[in-house]
Image (cartoon, rainbow over all chains, first blue to last red):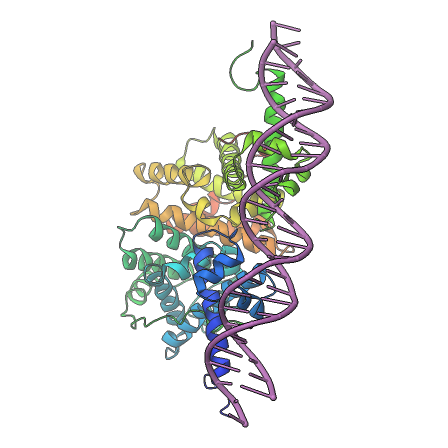
Length: 219
Length: 219
DNA sequence: ATTATCTATAGATCTATAGATAATGC
DNA sequence: ATTATCTATAGATCTATAGATAATGC
């Protein structure tokens, strides 16, 4: 019996696949703002039998919570994966912001789940918010940022991302990278970097975004 | 037969009262994030008969749309009313932001309706967004702001308010005026005011917020 | 006389489960 | 032999309306 992480038994993998499929289906409905969907329609979208739903969740609300959670978690995992090798907190912060900005076009469903759950994105202990708090506090401690109120800085960052995501969703013609990096630069200046450095850091080359692993991760 | 605005007939006023009551009830459910509510429960909360619902709306979704619309409209009316006599666009912008910040504690239901509909707040053609766009463009034209991308400035403003609202909702102990004015000052600097002026404008005395008229206004 | 509202309910829809089937483990 | 999934459905719940009642207009 292999242990830890991905291996497990075939039975457990099948179960996990069913669960992930239900979560993906729920996310597609959350993304389109359509929460009043019969369980049967969710299971049809997930391509599983109606009964399977109740093997995994007690109610639609519980599924929805898990679906939002999974979206936050996928986002957080992606940021960890792509910014793990940076050692300047200010730069980790900036890259996380800029990568998220690029995610809106690349993962419209994920981003619309987050937009439609702004309160969760802004203050959850999963996903972007806790990582932004960590980076802002570290950068302040290191003398890179001069932020008096890290909590306020976090909600400004998360709010800016909500606004950006909505803009990119409403105006498909706009250049996402340019808009994102402009906002990143503004935030870095607000947090105490000088103009020149804000500009440099917010225009560094970014790592390639791979594929976001979609629903498997959540609690 | 009196004409225009508020007067109308007694019958029409009664009808308007029923409608407003349904909208208020819907807003309370939207505020608590509970959209899956039977029509009967909505009408009970509104203290009207089940049948009255169908005199006014074809479906719950239509009621919900009207309820969000009414919240945006109430917000917009309030801003117009309280900032109407200012002639500096930069100051109109700042006061609108600061008044909205103070609204979160004073009108928790209104603000939670808006937080739970972030996309609507950010890009609707009602409420804060169109007014912020107007003020930012005017202030830029007048040489007060140096904003290159007014649309981006608007979504940053709206996003900052979402973040602020969520923070004030999650942390009842925080000083709302201080947090709000700090963010206002940050935004004014980002939009091109010098530090001294940003500070002054974001700490001017505000007019008293009266009562927000709640559901009567929307389409 | 007209209009809005209310109460009661038929019919439609949805939830949650029981029992049958299929996949995996050993 | 065990575990997950699937299909079919009883019972619960909800929607939308018909018909009765109450308020207003004239």
